[in-house]
Length: 378
Ligand SMILES: Nc1nc2c(ncn2[C@@H]2O[C@H](COP(=O)(O)OP(=O)(O)OP(=O)(O)O)[C@@H](O)[C@H]2O)c(=O)[nH]1
Ligand SMILES: [Mg+2]
Image 1: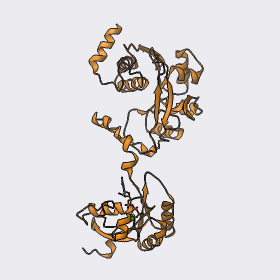
Image 2: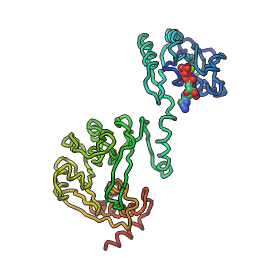
Image 3: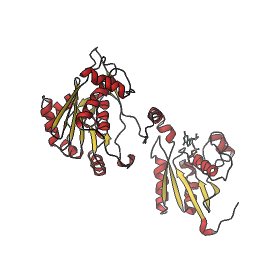
Image 4: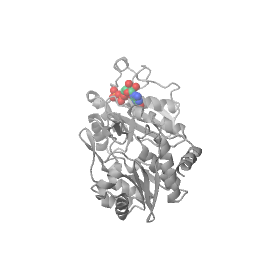
């Protein structure tokens, strides 16, 4: 074992609830630092933390095990402690000699009794603490797979794990593709500002689908970073037992002050303003603050920008890909608005939405297809 001067020696205790992955973390540290040339695994019985026969057989830690490694010119003692309450004495002993504690949290079960117990013992000794969230591979497995398609298309993504993915089942119970019943499949819970990377963006699009995912403080904080675009559905579509219902947005007056681009559909516009005439509804919504209003209905899109109205029709030959047309329309408008005026961006949005509705899934066409739609209009 290489010798290190005393001031370069650190002792860390790994603590946490039973089975959260402390020994696995210790094994990984030993391997990454080069102290062990094999990556020991608890499940394979090759861990160098759990070494006694009983520990290997039961796959739990019974005693504390100090492991030693070198890291960036320091000698590091890492004490892997047991998580089960029966063996708490060994964790307490480890904390007596530790300079700091790493509290491991299992992402699937979150903060557990053992996590709290470990935290309190470390706190009592006034030890600096770091939290290590483990088993993230299990937590987000399904949801993160869904991002592969985006990644392959060259889209940069940042994923934050949540207990569930917000999802909606659209049921079309008649041949009429304009009528559907929406049922909630899951709710991801609120986004936090820390989940959203602070990248320079000319527009930040909030495309939430169920009320409660994005709250007022988050909108306010995003608006402080730059222009915000929202689809109002994420504020008025409320979970009510087993159903999704549309309810007015109680914070709308303040919320819309933070919004530069607002997307609403006909039903939402009527609900929020009481106006059945769309141009009146758009003008009313603009009074709250948004600079541009993108209003969709089955026949097409209307945009109010700089006091002017712009309109373009949806002329699909089929409605097989109708689900998601509002998102396509708004995303196309915003994307094109970065370089074009509102009139041209509206024409793009309507043409792409026309094509998108003809086939399920995201639109994968090209500008020539868009050109053909424009020609069909003239
Ligand atoms: N999928 C997955 N499994 C993990 C991870 N970390 C640990 N495990 C598994 O979780 C189980 C418990 O891991 P351990 O490392 O023994 O947990 P521990 O905190 O040391 O458990 P105790 O010492 O008994 O409290 C084992 O089956 C590990 O293979 C991880 O990041 N991902
Ligand atoms: Mg262990």
